[in-house]
Image (spheres, rainbow, N blue to C red):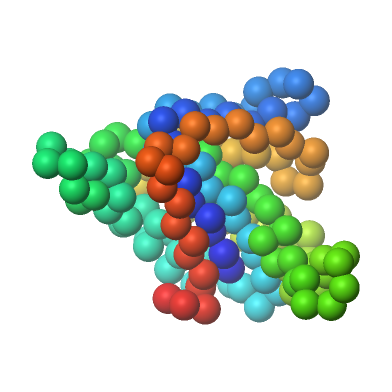
Length: 148
């Protein structure tokens, strides 16, 4: 499982010119699911993500968590995080989880996040989405379950 976490001052996602999710301060997270991923891996990833201390404190040090700043989440499913570009110029996505499995884990992650984060917004699984954000920093973290 892969999470690309961007600390944002604002972010939104639209489908067919209609905003379906919007946050202010928090994380916009792209979520990639592999076929071997399961709920235990999702739990570990959610704990790590929500516990990250990447917001600045009064001294300008990245020492505050999402909860400390009353931050929000915008969660977007993105199978292309599992693109394999080793051969040729056309990426292969065979390492990504099947749509049914990926959608189930994506929805599971959303529900787990809602247990600790008051404002969790989401994209639309499998839809053509337009994501807009203002990366604060810029500050981007990549979490890979194989490296946790």
